[in-house]
Length: 287
Image 1 (cartoon, rainbow, N blue to C red):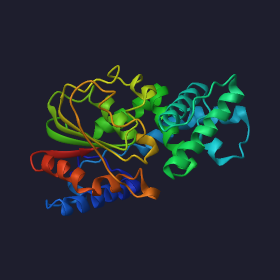
Image 2: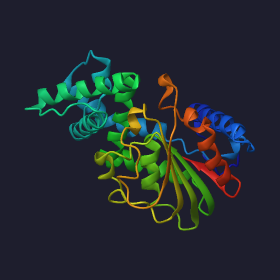
Image 3: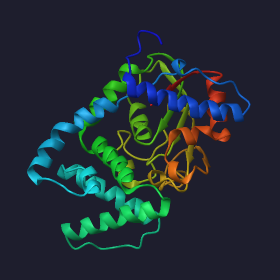
Image 4: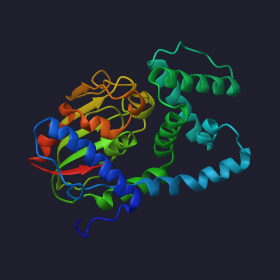
């Protein structure tokens, strides 16, 4: 690994290996050459995300007191972030078929959010706690500028300044990737953007992007999106009906218990083939 790439830490290296293992499985099925994990740029921002979220969350939790329910404890406690988190869950559940509800107050809204989490969990067979944690991180990134700036600064430190790249993003990383495209050095050419398990189909996410809405980034030559119908984070997909501009999309059948896992997305040959074809011409980057 070249010395100009920041060390992602032990957990970052584990994630890098998971990404590479999934992709290499898909590349093998697609009849393409595999990659070495160390050959991929991997901007791991997990530590920055947790640290930036920590101070405000600690103050909010202290004010609210102890929380016994682990799902409620996983939810953001800062008021603005909490509202965005609730809006995302209600929107995702509604898109997943939950009948519309009209909460009369804060307590009723809390009931609707819990009902939405249960609906998403029952519909997708993914754990309520995991769903809550993922939407919490997305809400914190979009609502708190300190969190957003800490994450983007970390990723920009890790990105190449020049050259042609493939940008592969997953989950919250697809939101970070969209913001990143507004700040990348002009010398960095994005030949291919790959998004997987993305919440970019939700209105509550699109409205808070640095690009100002669901507009296909001009600096991306090609955009490919993969989604699983049983992935609660990607419940707003396909994106074509929500985003302006050309993109290619494919639904994939991920295992029920691993519907949101990036290695499952990349293991599909139809996804890996797109990534591998880009790798053949460019230097891959993952966010």
